[in-house]
Length: 585
Image (cartoon, rainbow, N blue to C red):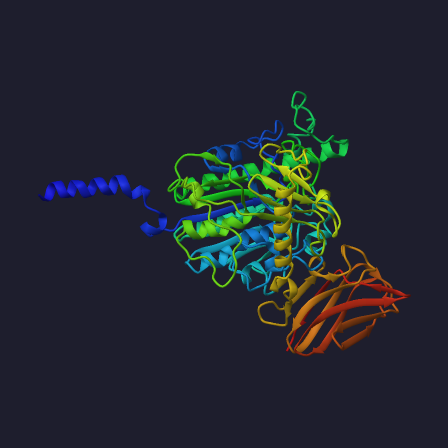
């Protein structure tokens, strides 16, 4: 009797073990999450672009589960907050891409923290954009290793180590490795990929989470010449002569921008070929879940598969992006999933696939995509809320709510009537051309009521009402650099000299050396002011043509306040470009 039983057990093991979940078998998959910056839905060969060459990504997509109606936020920091937490960005404190609105609250639980608790090694390489100071940096939010740039992009004012490099900001940059400045050689996308590969090689014996977050093809549109040469002679507006989809006319500048973007995308494609080859060499490919997505629509005018809108817009061209998931060990084959899904679904999906509990004591807006992947029918549609305006959401301006095939768009005033809204059936009208608001008033009213309910809930989120402060003077970050991306005050703080700016901080009692760096050299005879709540310190400058002022041995108490620095001279109040604060005792 022993032999038949043994054969039966062997049959069960051989035929049914592959059907068991990862959690049931006690294995943890490696996770690689790849996201690009301002790469629109149409910036891939597989989505119908006849010009851009993306053989690696096209092949990857053909091996993956493809979510064809996947949505994100209209701009980058909100998308990244939702991606990391499974929650609408406003719940996390993220309300803008700069102006102090891109600092995520430290009480949020990120994908990295969730996986780290399950003994994953975690690393981020590229763009973070959810806070550049303690306690909101990657290393404070669950990442063991980080090589990142600051702020929303290299060459931007917040990323002050690359800003002054101008048209070379993407080359040979000074980046931030585990919170310290480090000089690198090469092109940024190559560097981030090489660092991700190095991390994977170090982590190959343990489960790992690698967040490869390219800053390309975001502006400034800088790319190695060899990649630009591939596209320098193309006409990006051609090839659509017999296509009846709506396309925006491209200017000569649009065409040149598209050439550079396509070159940057091809560079990313080549880098991903290196990454995927390394997985094969290390024999990690089978047990590694890889996701590719982008963070919003294209910033510039170019091919976006006929959809309306681009980056910053709540129309589909601004928020619909590619999303491909490949996991050879557990997900066999490839197919399209047309169900409406979104960035908020990634964290709960990874939690279920990896056999982990989702974060407790908070509302998750996303839900696991695993039932869809497993082709289970019971996945009820939920409403998705979209918005984008500077500083805070503005009622009924660039706002939308989609549920099932219907999408209500608000581009009107706070007291608008229902007929001022736009209603689209995105399955029948994927280009959002036919407004149904006047003929389907019941549907429009239902979606408007849900939009109002969601808006009211989100703008009253605790982390939005109580913005996360930067903590100054701890051993976690000393010295600390306060940059313009995280400065509040006037709307639109960028590289202006005369602008009112401030940082919301928690100060630890002590004596500080403080350095104020300016965009342009300043004249002598003025006075440097440092306002910290009711405590004001001043310093007279007697050096002409300097671009920095230092105040040493400044005593500051324990307090939460707005830190307001400015140089007053000749009726001007000049705001520093950045502030360095070192607590000396």
